[in-house]
Length: 484
Ligand code: GLU
Image (cartoon, rainbow, N blue to C red):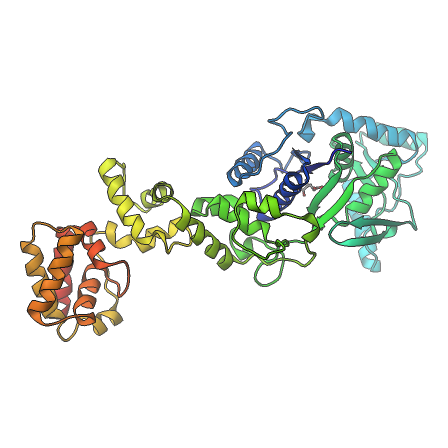
């Protein structure tokens, strides 16, 4: 049988890291097993779904390099691939279930259901639908319809049945039917199918062989298996991937920081870093190598090596990986990613060829130490602002002793220098040290601090030509005023 997997996100929010990781596992499964990957948009929750969120799904998957074979934008023989375009299909199967006595119309009002729920909670029971409408007579139904009540459709959950399935990641799972909340709604009173119903119809009709999704769906699986059985469908193989946790070991959420993948993209995390990082959440290759290209990951990926322990989203590890990929990137790529951040900070406006060339040189000074591109705003700030602030403590430690002498003589030399290229500055500094008899740290630190406001940073002979004479002279003045 042809292997087919699917990624089935709901466009009800900016796509979450956890969903992207599910997409990635489906993608890796498909590419390593020669399976087809289907993208299906589950947009039946009309109040929460939006086209904008749907667009973000496409955008972020493409950014990450996850390609699919069939989907709303890639016609295949099992479409449409958006649930909101498949309503007649669900209706047909819901009616079949009613005709077979496996589902019924329920006319309970939200108030009645809420009352039932309160009563069960008061009794200490797990809330469960009472089954009130399971055996309505024709007359009772007609009366409800006359009252204008709009029915939902409920699927009968059998009592006392144990549903068993073998999960590819979690192993054998057994769940008792009486823990499932009672007869479940499969079509809401507005005519929209619920997730558990639509997913069974779609996975069957789209010939899905393996359902790979987050473990938050484990308790949905027995409900879905009961529907498979009721409709005479053959269920797929299930694999529930462990949820990603935050550093405090609770489910990854906004409390832990960014959960929308686009926030990482915007900060200047590179897609290959994200792809690599996410692939290692719950999986590792046999050789335990961590830095891998997409092609290497696909080559090494083995679904059986996914383990069931919950992985922790470790931003420091992501930063380390991203730093590596930034180092490997061309300077032009990093400059292009840096420009929007520098614009946003108000540091630059239009970028002409000269500015671009200068930016390349500036970014190059910091490129190898960036965790993510947006850090350039802080790291390279001294190149863009007129005035720099001097830290009081450092000022006390550095601007003392011979410092004034060093700064004064450097100022004089610089004023007279026509050439401030890297080579010229190198010679200038060398000669000056000899001339005033101060060298090493006592010589370089005051200069560095005066012109950059920092006690560490890129090589001075590179910084000076890029800062330019005027800026440096101004800063030297300011620093010297601090001494007297
Ligand atoms: N729309 C569901 C979700 O986003 C799909 C779950 C599944 O893969 O079955 O969680």
